[in-house]
Length: 91
Image 1 (cartoon, helix red, strand yellow):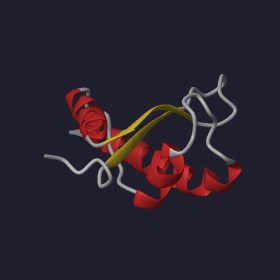
Image 2 (cartoon, rainbow, N blue to C red):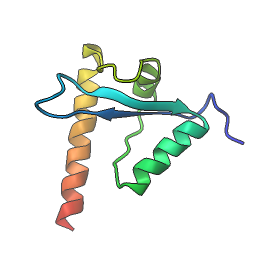
Image 3 (cartoon, helix red, strand yellow):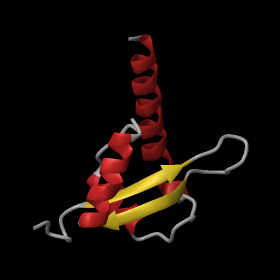
Image 4 (cartoon, helix red, strand yellow):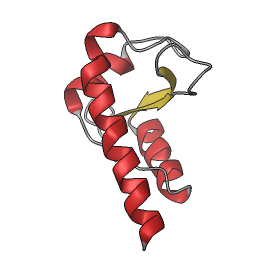
C-alpha cells in the first residue's frame, strides 16, 4: 500500500507564444501521483524529480501559472527536458 503522504507529482504545460509562464495541469499524491508518473512513462514524457518544487506545485490550483519565484528552477528543468529529448532524437 502506498503512503499518500510520501509520493507527490505535478505536471506542467508551457505553450510558447500562448502561455506567459508554465502552468500546473495535473497534480496528485499517492495513487494519483503514481498514475501521473505512469502516464508520463507511457507517453515518453521526461520526468524530473524535485521534492521542493513538487511541494510548491502540489499546493497550487490546477491551471495556475508557476509563480515567478520558481522560474529559475522550472527553466532548469525545461532545459534538462529539452536536452533529454534532443539526445533521444539523435539515437
